Length: 71
Image (cartoon, rainbow, N blue to C red; front, side, top):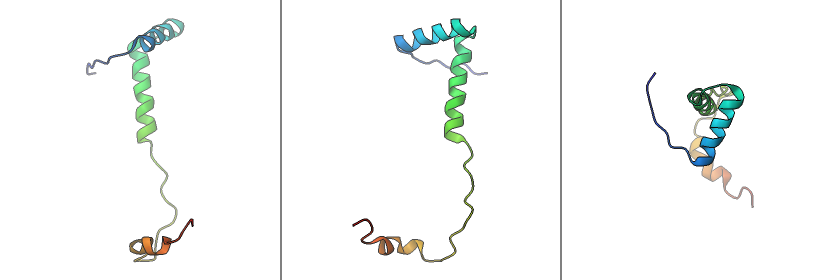
């Protein structure tokens, strides 16, 4: 493991201490869990598209095809 430091405002620190006391877990463990959740939320694998765009040139005509859409 590598060491890193973070700054917490008073409320976050107090909440972290309280959760640690309630759960019997260390603050470092709780912080790692939070980081893991952020990583999971942002890097989760997205489902692959089922279809493919087969009409070549369609993407180059998007502006033309969408002209007036939503008016």
